[in-house]
Length: 382
Image 1: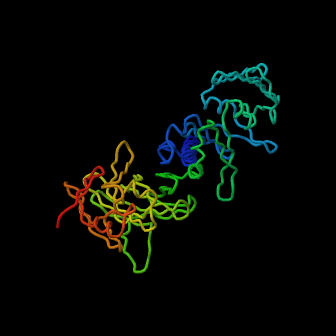
Image 2: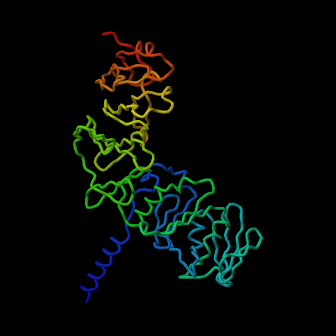
Image 3: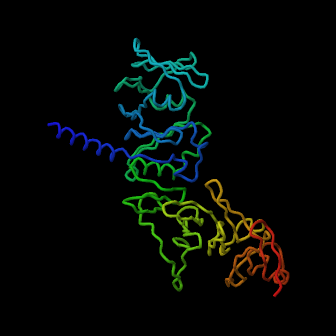
């Protein structure tokens, strides 16, 4: 009998471990396009789960409930999660809340709520359920001066999401971040995500998705150009410091996104409006060349040759050479080599931007030596 109990206890422990996935990183580490500040003062809940996110950190929460078509949220959990002080008075089933200088009073079984002495009518009465007090979702937002967003579940999104945030903290409502939350609620092991792409890990392998729904294996493969094929994304670059992956956001912004892939660590190097055509590394920096096939806004303020440096967990990119110049290609689209040494980058270039006549533009044709940092070049003699 004792051995049977031990087996049952062990099996229950395993079931609990596999049914409650743990997330090693807060949302702002998983999702590139929000910061810790963006998520401060926010809470994410779901009526379909006890998982919650407070200030971007996952916690085991108290699950909201639905009664007669109204969504009710756990008052203490939400209030304390947002920094309020809560006191429950068993004698009369009342609750007092102190938050940001405000005094809030309500009572289980009643539809009224007092905020700084002013009495308001709620959509439904506060109730006691499983030793917690629940009140209508809209009222908790009004009482705590928060914006409340309710995203109902759909065929493709199995979890409803409740977002409670500061009025001026709209970044948390980024649609891609909400899709990442959906994946986390489903127990997916998120590796990295941003507004363009999402990466998960399953059975020891990485998978990638550009729509946050369907995933396919994410593995390196050599890019072999095919005649008459125009391939803008899903291209790998093999460099001296590892692999880089180019994604093309054809379904949304039509931008080009360059990632560094270091095992299971993925970081975003740059986002470009122009197609990224080549990637090189020198020492610890990344250099990449774009082509202005479709034109480029504010071309007079930048160039098509960029350098990216990794610092404090982020890549920062800046253009090289003289603003308005176009490097590595001539007017017919012919590509030139662009070797990198300690002395800089040497390649063909010319002034493309500006109201120059054809003759004036031709006078700028030549080979230039660009500094590895900064916006300076020097014409070479050959």
